[in-house]
Amino acid sequence: MKFIELKLGSHIVVHGYDKENKEVTEQVIVEGFSRKLVALSRIKSVSEKYILTDYIDGRWIYWEYDGTFEAVNELLKK
Image (cartoon, rainbow, N blue to C red; front, side):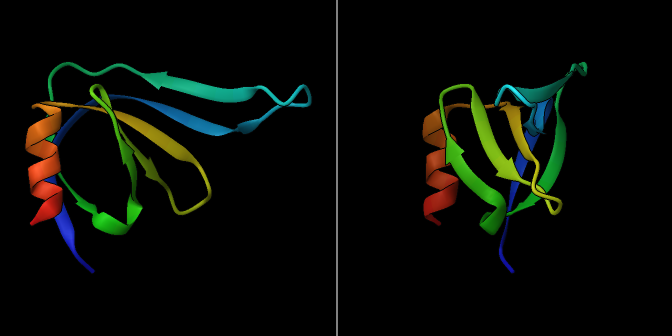
């Protein structure tokens, strides 16, 4: 399994959907960023603000990251 090192911070966890088909989310606010190793297979998309990852139990997590889109893109290309 291949990993990428990222600095991740606050995030939004999507737990699923309610009866009206609206996302059930939990916002987690943290100070600063922490270094994390993330399996490349868990990364689903990258935007200017978030990296979307999946989780073992089917949840989705939108992570804020430290750095630029271009820097993350270069890391993913390696």
